[in-house]
Length: 279
Image (cartoon, rainbow, N blue to C red):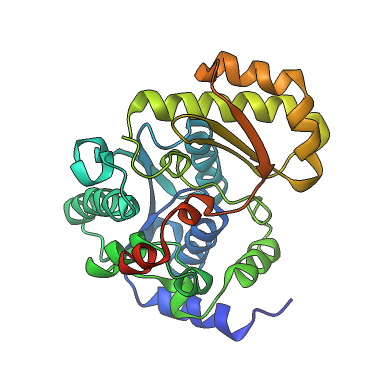
């Protein structure tokens, strides 16, 4: 496969960045940015930074570390303190703005200390078209580079490129931070995040023999919603193992609803005017 012009353009852009710090979540987008940066600049000119906080599942941090080993690139785990930011804890529609700001400000401190020239993130062209992405505004305000979006690479093109480069994240499901599972208006706390993380891990274990791919446990305050692949909805509703997993994770006695997975489902709860005002 010959690289498409957009991918070639991205590599060319990255080659001009200088020493680059990549904000690396471990998802397919940031994986492609990291792999491209290594190809364009050399592993010794690149560093990957992953946030460590109660909102980031431990399994994702471990997977990010392993991925960096395969590329031979340095990996730093940076403790972020978004819990100290009122706008984040209060969990309003722009929560992601405060989360991304905290991560990028922490990364910028490391970049200054170690003389990196640029910070890059995995925003792609599909993200720009999605509308409600407060975290994109935080990155733009800080002059962070977006090589995928700048080259016009959308989500499908990113996955194609990851597959071409034999990155094991090419078909990895989207994995937003744990705070995205908490209904807007409910205070974000380590206890709430921990409960969701335990619940998702336990429910995934129950459904693994049935080929589960996309899974979310949504804390709605007075109830909990499990979102799964469409073919597993009825099974998850009736299987006692799913109910027991949720009970043991900390949702005992909380009313349960099971629906099909859909990315960004929490945004559906916002009035349209508020969504666009805070985009």
